[in-house]
Length: 71
Image 1 (cartoon, rainbow, N blue to C red):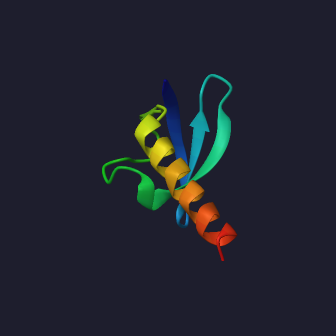
Image 2: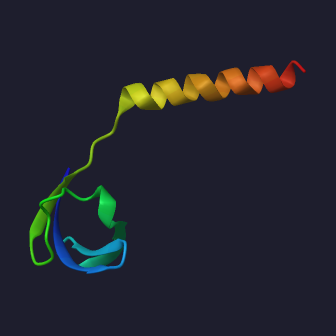
């Protein structure tokens, strides 16, 4: 899924982004934007499910639960 985001302005360490057709306001850490991004520009955000990271996290949590229950 790709979202179009308008970089509205910067407020100290935060970038004010307007997301999607409804212009939902999101405060985003400015340090996480591309260095070349400037207020007044459109950005593209791509969202995707990461099955490998999800599975890895599930395994880590299961291992922690086993350790806690065995104490």
